[in-house]
Image (cartoon, rainbow, N blue to C red; front, side, top):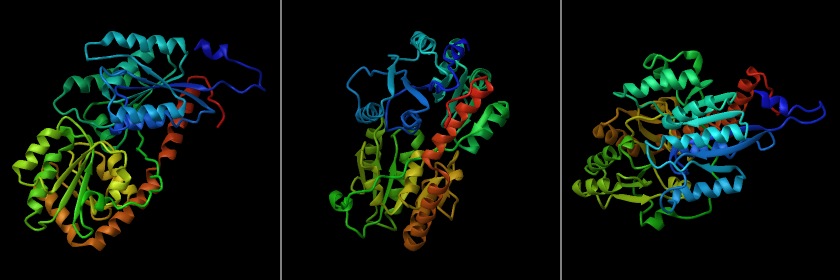
Length: 400
């Protein structure tokens, strides 16, 4: 705390900017949690905050993938400093000493870590370095059958961090009721997204060879088990009995892509499913859809669903995690149980049969996104949290 006094000035001199280090495992603009951490770090008010993005698994062992290249461009354009720790695996715990040295050398005021691994090590590093304010930010609660992770959440992260942030009320409830974390240490802070940029006129359906009248559904996300895209594929197979011309877009990359493509072949729906990989034109693709889908087994507050809402799409989703915070079934879309292809297919068929009702749901979803899940409002709230906790530690942040 002595360094605060080192920067004392006369009353006519402005206070120095608050120094914030955001800690995350991966650099990518593709995954939801990593993307949100990137967006917040690059959009803090530069007049008030000096922002550094610390990525533990950077640089990568090979050429950066498309999501990393996109993130690099965003960091470069923002002027935020990027620091990589060069971690390759879970056993490379020694690299976290580099973070401790960084925090001490730059006399950091706030450490803001995101996701479990960075929450553990960011909290430890922050406290070892004597950082005044440490925040841990969890983006989904998925620790069923993992008592060690729940123990670390409660005894290390929640006790070591000034606040343990949850992105949904359900996640916060599980932190308190399942993990036994002191409610006063938790904070519900919903995600937000920026409005989509104006789109150039283009006919995505024509580009993809899909006629205007063909029913078109889609999902956006990293292709990993959590997203349960296999359930969507089975729902498409069931839907074809009633809607033989149904088409589905799968937007995103991940290690499950090959197995999902094999499943599509086994279900004889290869002609109905397009695997588009990572795309930088997601808003344009969403504009071509009739219905957006989230088939996940668990979620916090998924940015993809917020993007669906921004696009004015009706949404069929599993009723997991924080999704009921975003989507009220029958109002903004339809919610179904997880791991139930029949229920998913039935909900999709219902909205495809009632296009006017579906459009009205999409309009209400967009209105709710604008009113309740705004990116700028989320960032200002995070900045306010930094100021509040610094003030409690005896230092006032710079004037807004």
